[in-house]
Length: 509
Image 1 (cartoon, rainbow, N blue to C red):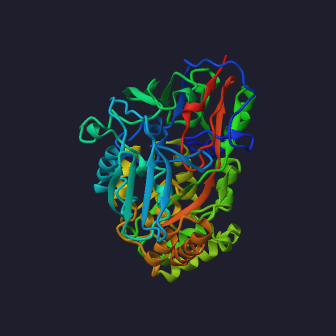
Image 2 (cartoon, rainbow, N blue to C red):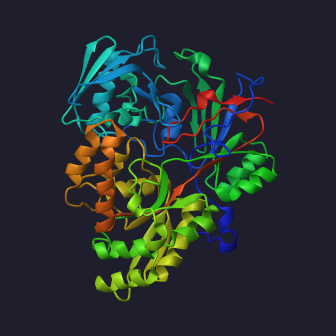
Image 3 (cartoon, rainbow, N blue to C red):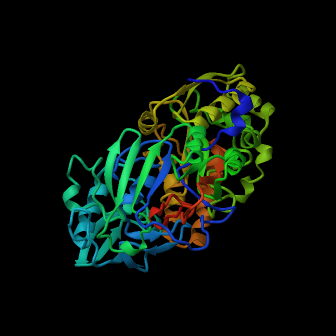
């Protein structure tokens, strides 16, 4: 792995697939001016898509999936529900069934008509196996109750499913394409764009003229180019090769000095270290707690992110409704002496060794190196290795790793899904089988209602119990989304929970 001098670390930062709002706002907007409806928006991204088949997609693939697909429930980039492929929906009083009225006049990219039969076929396929099966686990039955009406029955009260159906699990794939072996590279959805090119390092899309809301689309297409290195990605916008990309907070001054427009906003992604509780010494809660106290989160935020990554010891940042206020005084959770004492209690007075893997990305590499140095202070030796993103994802799902530096989307599709994936035995990213007493019952309570106030209590209890048990994911900081655009590019809103709307981008000049 290539080494980077620490003196330049502050210039490097988060590889986040998003844009955000001017200053601290939610969108990059200027006064309306003439724009080119046929312009192609050129956007720099850190990596290629894993798959365009929602069943095979990775957690960071929505930036690609949202271009070609739509979900049953719409959700604005700010996180508010709105009509999607369903125009309205109603829960039963016991929250165990949901009836959706579907949008009429929608056509799939292959010419098939969108209706209730298509929804039933697609949802049954997504819940059968693959990446979305866990999110749809409580779905007991899906049935058409009219040409444009669908009823979904759940095995338990499931108010949280509104968020799930606004994400990848709510995507409707054209029925004829579901069994196609080419779906991973030839998606067929109802979205505003169709995929026109997929080659290593570049993905292209064209406006779908038969899109049901075609008048909303203000560009003719999208061209995404991969730059795994953040400084190179920023330079691509400075040179005019790209129209925009995401940058780290530490790159803002450089971008501004080069005449770029800076946009930023909050989101629900965090940087952290995922531990396999069946590997190395991580099955011992005292060891996991030692790691919690060994990490100097403020130093990491200041040096790597120029303060643009809020230190946190819990998955849900301050201001996000599941956040446990009792854990927000982060400073007291950095204590080298306590970390050493916890290791001594664990029977490891001389520490231990493990391998820390990360993706091929500047931010992950730099964060791993800083963590390596901080852990060394308490006697823990971490050897760092860089893997390809696809290998990292596969290893995380299969448990073929000890620890991994990761960017995690804890709010998508719903914060309770993070709990189900990481804290419940059998969870998609809980290869070590971590659990705490009562988590399953509290999770059921947190999922019963769609009212955040009713859900907050059990979610906070889970957060506190997991912290006390020594979490299997060591939170580091909540990332601020920062983007840089050339002049004349406006209209992209902050995807707070990973919901992307490229159709609203405008390009002039």
